[in-house]
Structures are given as structure tokens and as C-alpha cells.
Image (tube, rainbow, N blue to C red; front, side):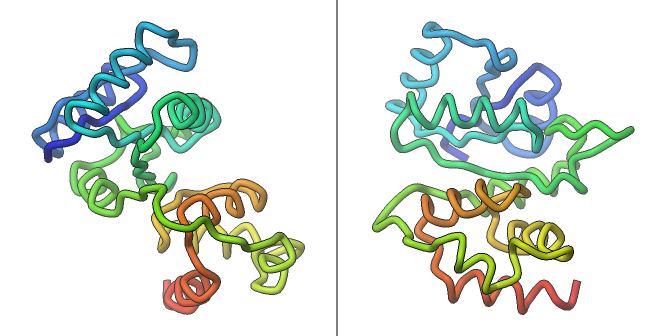
Length: 177
């Protein structure tokens, strides 16, 4: 793998290095500053970057900060169920094959952005019902965009240009899970 992987901490570096041979940068948590962003920007210019953060609030916060500061960052998402141990979710808990699969399913902001609405999500049963969270979890896993609430799901599918037909296919495919 040629890209530099961006993770949160030292344990995440070890987990990624056990899965793939590539450069890895740790942010050191959510409170990193301009010096770390400069290092990440340099890696983006040199090799390109893939953001692989924990499937939790802190990981999302880091992902958003990098997305705003580093244009063209690519994103990989780990399913919470496959990156958890003792009720804690994190890259360091994922098996090497899970990390490799996430990195093989990387998402890039490119092409035209989607124009789906919350009404579209409601029509597909992804919000507004008791089963919506589980349907979003399964679709998010199939689409490689992670697990999230309806607003974040909508933001991600539109950011990555995922079309309604792609979501519908992911939902059909996930019925067999």
C-alpha cells in the first residue's frame, strides 16, 4: 500500500502495521494542532492519505477535522462489531483481515455530489422507524461508509456520490445477513 494511513494512537499504528506495510501517522487523539495537520498535509502531497479512525465519536471528530483541513483525503471505515473489545471500539481491536478489508473499500470524495434528502432515507426505511438504525448499520457496512445516525448517513452518501440505487442494492444484499 502506498498511501499513508492516519490513525488516532500508538496501538492503532501497531494494528495497521500488522495488517499492511505502509506509512502510518497517529494524531495522538482529538486535540492535535497545526503541526500535526502540516505533517498530514505533507503525507497527502507525498503519498496520499487514508483516514482510518475508531468507529466512535472521537474518531468521527478527528475524521471531520482532517477532512476540512486536507482536501482529497480518502476514508476507510471499520464496522463497530468487528473493531470492539470489552465494550470499547477502536482500530487497535480489529483483526488484520478486517483492517485490510476496510482499506480495500476506501471511499473518495470525487465526481458529482449526491442529492439525496432525508425524505429519501425515510422512503427507504433508513430513518423514522424502529428498524431504521439496524437498516442503516447494515447499509453502511455494505457501502463502506461506517455506522452512523441518519443525518451523518445522509451527509456521507451525498459526500461520496452514492446513489439511491446503490443504497437500495446494499439493503437488498444485507437482508441475507
